[in-house]
Length: 603
Picture 1 (cartoon, rainbow, N blue to C red):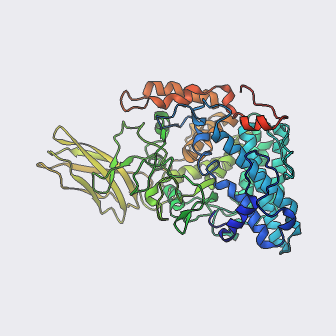
Picture 2 (tube, helix red, strand yellow; picture 1 turned 180 degrees about the vertical axis):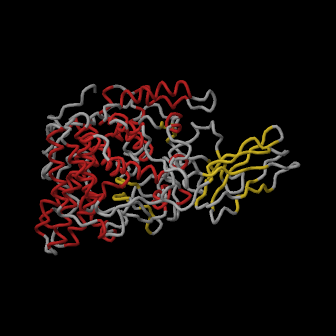
Picture 3 (cartoon, rainbow, N blue to C red; picture 1 turned 90 degrees about the vertical axis):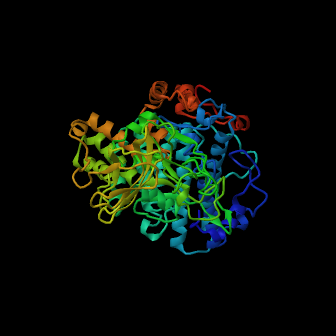
């Protein structure tokens, strides 16, 4: 976390390190015990940094929680050599990624407990003490929330480990856990600072707590608890965020470019995990844009491009939705062409992947092969708007507040908050005569810029123009000039512009004519807006749709998978899923050390 007190991060890690792999670590021997620590503000801040540090681990938001632990119906792992893995739903309870996530979260809880128990010893400003304590209380609750959402009846740990003999902890009912989580977060909401206190988004603020309280209550209203009284709480907390002055960034893609460029927009991104480099060294374990992203080389920034999309998910976007060609790449990198990018043909869907975070925009140097400095969002304002709409619909049906919230997200998605329009596609009026493809140059257009496309020839003429970028800011259609190439030429290409000026892209009458149809529209909008952000599996599980959605995805892949291209592995995760996979297996290491814990059903 670059902005969370880096100057004392080393001290924090010394305070909270441990050589024990059990999730309930015995009292460490390689740092000052609490009785010798927590003497002043600096030591409190060091301990607090250690609590935050968990968010940046590979086992959490550095990788696993948006990659291996969020494989759902919108994508598949494009690493054909994988035969057994957590992401493929054919893992065993001994899976190391599973164990690492469990261990990291309980380590974070233990660190928070130590701070909460000892913070009153410090000589420091009382307001700063209150804020630090509020952040620790919230983070302890948040780590419990992730554990309970993913594993169900997990042990609730509210005191720090003081002895190596403290290893036996019983499963705590998820209802008890959620009630604790909500109570603690509500307490923290009154203690932490407002969002405008900081010019960066990695710190827990009131808006963060309110937004996550909406998420927790939405989960409680869904499976498995199904406490529908919680929908009112979702509306309450989401509206507090709404009233705090948050707004959407006008440009959807800019939200994610900012994360690559180390820029912050706390009105849109309420909470993000920060990764970065210092003195040429990676200081957090982030693989954002490395394990996912657009497959690339070292010059651009190495990426595995390890998560590709399904045909059905790609086609769920309408053609004017600007999110589609940003969240899903419509080009690949190539050193063989000027500009280094080649557009995909319309039928090349399975080639495309999770591309929200692109290393070409990463500014921190050097660019490492295994890690990046790109930040990851835990909570965005668009998510809050959609949670508000979902809960409002479940309580009161299709209200104007709910419709307005969804339309706000849809309008941004279609460029309605931006100035000007984009080039949506190119029409070939005359294919001309060519033996080598020319380069398309877009110019004019009333101050617009950035449109780019790949020209393809077949049978001696231009047969396709595949968009790389639609650009932005066009107030009129640009002119397309063809440069280079070989042959007699003569082609005429006409840009097709988006319809931001004439279409509002709001919910249709059919989408809001009943609570059932509106519910379907909201769920679709969540999938389009929040894809690849670690929330799709979470949503499907709480809606009670995870297993059925994965089996539908399996059937869809069987009928749409290309016969060539080596994508047979695309079906692995969906084929392996069973009913038990709505929860993860409790790690074998925990079962071996904790005599009181019971494994989840089916394992």
